[in-house]
Image (cartoon, rainbow, N blue to C red; front, top):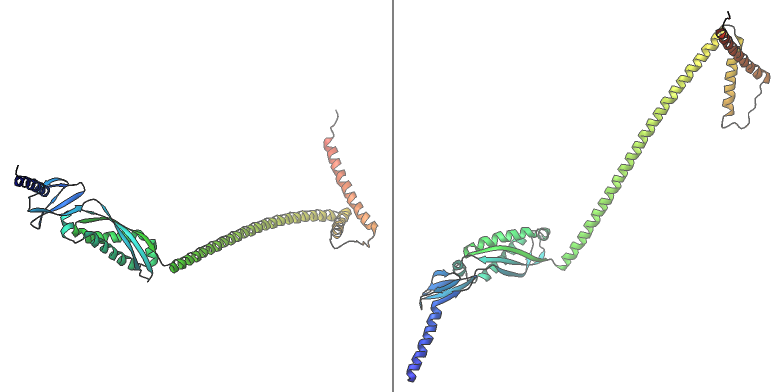
Length: 319
């Protein structure tokens, strides 16, 4: 075979493979290819085998349609109360329209990165330091809403934006630690004061109840004493009436009983006095014995009358 024919066959084979490579396209799963005809977008290839028009249609962009992660580098942000913070984060997004992601924005990843970083500064700059440190979920929600709305025209869906770290300056961290310690001490003192207050209230309530019960006891005792004095006075009045009646009937012994009774009561009070150690009685013993003798005579008469009554009622006449 002539050498010229061999070269021609080799050229044909190479040309065949070049044409086949430009005509047959295999799109892997998770990707979409944009097709341009003479430099103009015409269609989008889905995963699988596709045939292009040779030398006229070409692949414009190969777009990853899977959910992707975008790391947001650390940046310094000034809060509303002029606190300098170092903030970083992460964003999750997914391309929904390969044509828009290819032709509506140049360098999609860089555009999303700058958009997210700018909005982080905007959101945190509108909040105080305490809000930034305590309301991270609010920051994430606001960032997601703003960035997702801005990237809709790029054919992108932002699924999540998370702030990873918020780092205040060292001196601010130390000041926050001192503030937290002071706040805890303040709360401890408040709780201790509240406990003392409750203890004083309970003690006062107990003393009040004790005073009320003591007053109730004194009231009851006074009532009992008054009742006893009333009964004693009543008995004394009845005894005086009986003695007066006996005197009016001419019974001299009743007078002796009355005087002796009062005499004995007076001696008893003198004997029981705490200030009396020695008792001097400049009295005649015969008078005291006579008074006691009068009491004995009254007793005999009383028992004698009772015996007569019992004997009269107890005698049974014989037949």
